[in-house]
Structure formats: C-alpha cells, structure tokens
Length: 512
Image (cartoon, rainbow, N blue to C red):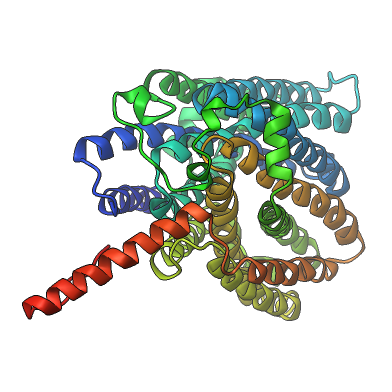
C-alpha cells in the first residue's frame, strides 16, 4: 500500500510538471527537460537513502550505538557536509552539474560500502578500532561526497528553469527529498527486518528475496550491514544512467538557451570575467540577501533533522518507560518514512505554488507562513509530548510539511534566484551548507539534552522556528532585479491586453 501511494505521488508530480508551462515551452523541450531532471532527481533521492540509513542502523544496533554516539557520528557528517560547500560549490560551478552528481553518487556509494564493511566486522566481533571513530570518519567522507548532490541538482535546474517556473521546481526538489526520506526510513527498515537472522512470523516476498539474493544467514548475527550496501548498489545504477541521459544545459541537448530572469540576467558581461573560486565566493559573501537566505536555511536544518532524526529514537525509548504510549505510537513508527514523504511532497508543492502564483515568485512570504506554523506546532508538541502520543506524532509529521516547504524554497529556489545560473552551485552550496551546520548543532545538542530529559527536545527547537519567522519576514519583498523587471513587463502586457479588450468591448483576457 505504501509503495502504491508513493507511486501515485510520483505520477502526480510528473503530471504537475507537464501541466506547469507558463513560458509556453515546446512539448519536445518539456519532454527532454523531464528526461533530464527525473534521473537527476532520483539519484538525489537515493543519495538521501544513503544518508539517513545511519539513523535506521542506529535503531537496528540498539544499545551497541548509544544516542550520544549517534549524535557525535551524525554531527561529524553534517558539519563536514556544511563546510564542504566552500570547495565543491565553486567547483561544480566550474565543471557542471552532470559531473557533480556522478561524483556524489559514486563517492557516496563507496563510503556506504565501507560503512557496511565496518558494520559487518563489528557484528562479527572482528573490528579492532573504536566504532565511533570509524563511523565518524566514514560518515563524514560520505557526507563530503553527498554535498556534491544538492549543488549539482540546483546547478542543472538553473539553466533549464525560468524564475517563473522555479517555485514549482522547488516543490519537485522537496518531493525528491521526501522520496529519499521514504526510501531511507521505510525501505531501510524493511531491509533491516528482512536481514534478521531469525525472521519472526510469516515472511514477505521482499524478506525472502533479501534472504536468498544476499545469502545473509551467517548463523551468528543479523545482516544489518545491508542497510548500507544495498543503497550503495542503487547509487551506482543511477550514476550510470546520469552519465548517459543528463545534460548541463538546453544548449548541450541541442536546444537554444534562454534568459532565466535570475540574478545572472543583470550581468551580461559575465562571460568576459575570469570566474575563479575567489570571485564566486566574494560575489556571494558580499550579497546581503544571501546572508538572510542562509540563516533561514540554518534554522530549517535544525528543525528538519531535529524532528526526522529523533522521533523514532524517542518513540522506541518510550517502550521501556510507557508501553501504552509506545503502542499508541505504532502508526507513526511503522509509517514514519511514508508520512514524511507524503507531507514533504504536499508542503513542497504548496509552498512553491503559493510563491509563484500568489507572491510573484517571492520566496519570503511562504517561508514566513511555514515558520509561523512550526512555532505553533512546537508549542503543541511541548504540551502533548508525554500525555497524547497521537497529537504529538501528528504535530511532528506536520513539522516536516512546513520545514520541507522552507528548505525547498531557500536551498532549492531562492539561492538560485539570487545567485544566478553562473554562480548557482556556490550560492546554493553555501545555503545548503548552513542547513547541515544547523543539523550538526542540533545533533550534538539533542543527543546531549535528551540523555537528561526528552522535555528539552521541542523546547530547544522552538527558538529556531521563531528566528526563521523573523528572518523570513525580513525578506518578504525581496526579488532579484531581473525578476522585478520581468514581473513589471508581465503587468504591462496584461494592462495593454485589458485596455485593448475594453476598446473592443470584450472582457479582459487573463495573462499568465
């Protein structure tokens, strides 16, 4: 049933993509652009699976990986991810998104294979080094390669999508993140269940397939390492597909390039400038609006992973404290990945559509609305945490709806708008880096605070939602100059059409 729902959502995303064509692109172009972004996006989704499988492995390993240890390992990876953008953002601007996504997929695949090997050695009693050190190093390297993924997908998007189309593509970006979360938590958990040495109850076709295909019966331990090695294999497949189908720009696919009306449109002489790494970083770090976008995404990093990473850990710990509470949480525990996927898709598309249709491609207003919703939800979580597992679980799920909306607007869209297509990887990289610096901070903080009391968890997150709201309000009216000129042109065209219609004595015609 879950797979059917996800498949329906994927079909809906594709239908919405083809139905959203405000610039009147040819059908041939729309199909070729789909062939471009779909494999790119699916690669990014499986990169997510190869990222959050660490959280799934933590629950599978139980006390063998404590909350504090998990927090340290995850923080090592996310902080590395955040700082990596100073290198690979400008690099992807130089080499292009195609090479960047292939580096991400193959590098992450290798690191996941090595993490699977470490897990195997640990469970078989052959690991001679500290597990935390080994996982911290390998997960940090995994996240270094992972960081090429986000900047690459935004780099390619900047050449293929006009500013008027980017709100919806930001929703597609959020959808891909949601698919990745579903793959990580639900597919990952299914792999963990299927790889158990002794299966309980009737077995599923998937469990039998895993048992036979990977010959996991060691006679000693569960084959938990498969939660790393299977995503590694999937990434290799998608990397090969990207090598064949992906093109960096319409020109590379034998179409004419077009003015995307982002910040690059204001700099017609960019091609005559020697675009070095120093030049790119200077342009980004001297742009005040980029600071605001980066800080908003920093708060979203704290909030997003502060919920996704810890809800299942909290719910499983409640089993030892309050069995009735744990039992009442089963719907959320068993469907966590699916719920995050569904709400993430809805949140991304709602925010992107509102941005493009109601706010003339301004990203601040829907970001502010989402942050206000998160403030309310965190207050609800604080008061329902121990008393009402259903309300608490629902609030946690709805948090992801709002935070994916913010993240897709900031990392997936605003950074490209204000960075421009020539510098979009550097801009989106710095912004996305702030997401994971925030994630690293929450990982250390909540890992430490929850060991004292889980009541500190939503209380710690609340100030970041308030800060995100204030920052979003500050950029309420922000738009690149080229986008303002484009919107003014549309208004003038509409006014001219209305006047012409009145002169003819007919009703004014809407202009998209």
